[in-house]
Picture 1 (cartoon, one colour):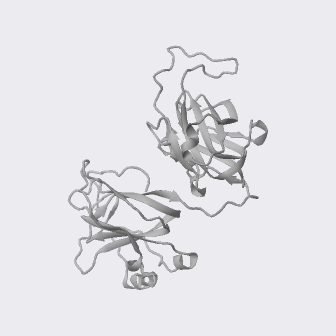
Picture 2: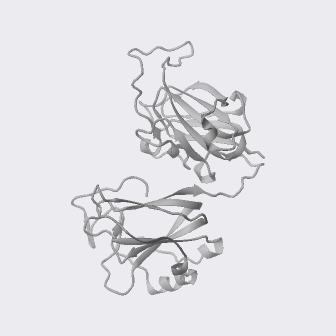
Picture 3: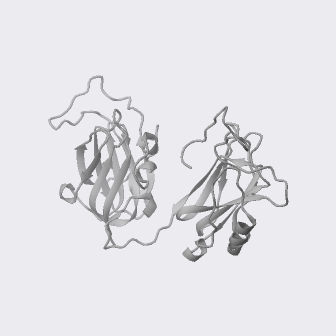
Amino acid sequence: KDGEPEWKEDVFTEFGKWMDGWETRRKRCAGHDWAIIGLNQPSIIRGFCADTAYFTGNYAPRISIQAARLNENDIKLFPKRCRKVGSAATAQEFKEVSRLKTENWETIVPMTELGSGYPETRHNYITSTSTSTWTHLRLNLFPDGGIARLRVYGTICCNPLNPDALTDLVAQENGGTCIDYSNAHYGHPKNIIRCGKGVNMADGWETARRLDRPPIIEVDNSGILQVPGNEWAVFKLAHVGLIDSIIIDTTHFKGNFPDNAKVEGILIDSDDEIKNDRWKTVLSTKKLSADKSHVYSSDVLDWNGPVSHVRLTIAPDGGISRYRIFGYAHS
């Protein structure tokens, strides 16, 4: 679930205090509690954050995590489950899921103690040294309790892109990643390559206001603000590609959108090379508007690649909701 856990002081259900997370009943039978989680894309996992926020006297004291790579036939074996508070797996559902032998999945996090849900102990960061690609996780609680959020960090491993298909080369779901940025005060630039439309401003990239902005703003003949500074974010494309069109979407950003933006590209073998000066302009500086999807087709691009990385620069500061680089995979 996106967003920070909430605390609602006076909200109770028929089963007890409402908690923003997963809480199991107090164990009164043999065993321990567990849940199966499907990843959005096959991924190599680098680490986790088990957040026990607000679970102070009812947090899970220990967890472990197992992983597997399942195919479509495996996934069909999962029973259909209800999501009603107070429910539990039935004997029939346990029987159906047992066909997957989830208890034998590879352990990528051994039994690990968690801290309680107070601010100073709620974030439990755990690294993973596995280099395999996984599609599903089994989160084990020992023996029971609650967790507010489980964050899974890693690298998406997507299928090779079809060179004949127009694809969003920077999309997170296709394997695009944000690898560097200048400022992420209110929202991380990795958000703008998520799938779908932005939900709100928090679901985008927003920088702090630059302190070097002049006391009185001036514009040039094109209406572009004349300011000394800018903010930027660098993205590694899912595949080296030829760019066909670009979308810079400021939806939800009405009084805090950037004045203008430009896009540059580079073809390099390593992320370490992004600091060099071989960047070429793909889209020259364009004036932006509030709460609008700006579409730039191939006829307005200065250069279309091939590129492996793109740099989005906004001036002087502000927020972007979504960023799309449509193009074709290139050998």
